[in-house]
Image (tube, rainbow, N blue to C red; front, side):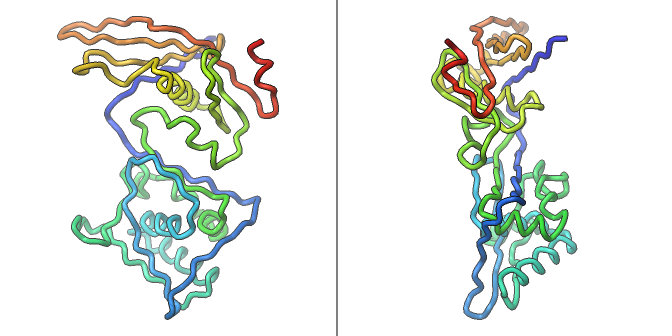
Length: 257
């Protein structure tokens, strides 16, 4: 059976935050209390932007924001910070009381928030997981959205990946650790095509939109342009490109001789 993955760029967006928790390499940093022995977490506003960080205090602020409304998670966070840093007190001053003008108003965009089962909850599975996420410099927080493809090589600079992905006609390599889910392969191929001017999200006055279909059996991706009329919808094939998935350690030049 052929496996066809479709990706159409749409405007109904949500955030898509993810956590990489490294439990193998122990490269711990700390957070230094102030002169009174106090650590203050002010939270933050974490939305759709494509941002990534392994900064210890920023990860702690993200988890403080995630835990708002959960006494159990907030207590775990405070206990961990007291134990790991030697602080006398941990103050969490962020608030989600919808006082938008407040300097301390904090939120995580809805799909990634605790009430929606966001991935931040994985760090609260145990105090050890929370420690590895916040204090381990090999643990990363990735933020973004599902409105379109992930920026090319967004993850590869931070994490060692198992696969390289290449479209035959272009020079770029993209990277991935897990291609079991079709959306990741779609996003990677779409990013390469977009970077080389082969697709766009929308045409002038939203008269057309581009989509990418991926045929995993033939390792081919097809660009379709959908033209929108007042009462019509027409598809046009704009081009087809061969791609390859290259396991780590393979000499890439050999794949296209």
